[in-house]
Image (cartoon, rainbow, N blue to C red; front, side):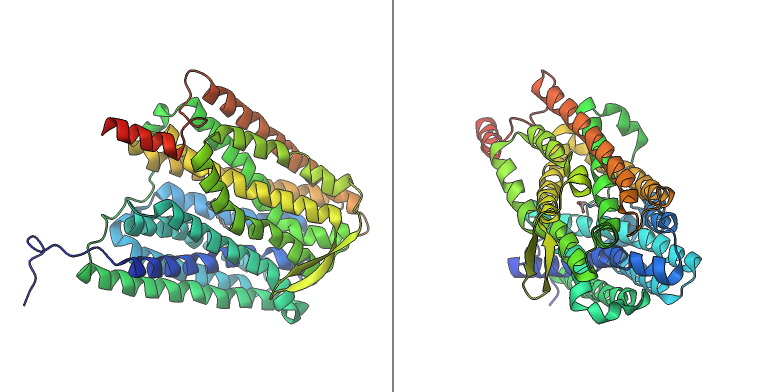
Length: 455
Ligand SMILES: C[C@H](NC(=O)[C@@H](N)CCCCN)C(=O)O
């Protein structure tokens, strides 16, 4: 007997089905973030065994962003045309090919091509995953689902850092850890295929939300954005241009400038995503209750300001045991430990407040353009900074024999953090004024009251 869907509409997918979807989409992101962050722990090996300069390493990072910029400019054409299940699978395949290319040969150009290909697959995979979650969770637990998805993605970043401990024998050469990253990327492709099957089945049996349009950039929308929006974009650029390149170079930096072994450096670096896994959703819940979003962004920027100078100039303090259950243990200097914990808290606070704030400032019809523009600017800043850091490290002859050579890079991060403070303060001032959008005042209770009053 055939079913007439007009008379007898399909039921919505049961909650267990939706959460299973979230698991597969998040596992795809887990592998994606792991592969991106797998470069950091092998930087010293690439320099020793392949003779790469810091400038060349910086370019490996930048190649990812240049590719991502090209894809973002193309707008989510592929996603809109072929749908989320095909897009997620195709981009997962591109990421896997990129991981293979990066690990394949010691030729610099091939590794560079691998990182470029990763940018072509990875950033649109993130957009496709976000679009898929919106399709399954809109009108239900969308924010919570996004939060969990980001936490599992960050677990991928942390796992890449932890591989210096649980996969220590692979770190005799630069290549084996990258083959491990390729195997982890296999999880991304497997999860993508499982997601494909689930979406395929759901299309026959359940009523899914309408396919969300992928975030597209319409240039005419840009004129309509207020100064508050542009302050947030500016903060986003300088914030991620500081944190992501710092993470890329962090393990090498802790080894060369502070004499830590690879496992200790990896565990220390992993504190950043680890803190974010736990604290980001909590900050999200807190800010939903109390508002004060621009204040929190300014406070986070202020707290971040001295951190890079503290790791450079403050005395290291006593060695403290650092134990990550199931992963390993090491001893690390107290100052580095504290700085990474505080930076981890900032890395949780600012993203948790910044991305959702855009939705309060920008008209819903222009939200796609707003996020696309923000991500585009983010990639531009994030493309330039690793090149500058690589240049500064080479120019100031940074090495274990001359750890002072790393200070110029740390001053550069500090200058970016200072700019972040200026932009977040401008945002705070604008939001406290007569043209504010409610970033300081809207809480989930006030929003509920407004809906109640209107109703
Ligand atoms: C939410 C935000 N994501 C991004 O900024 C992505 N465009 C890039 C993620 C790169 C992961 N290695 C975030 O992760 O805070």
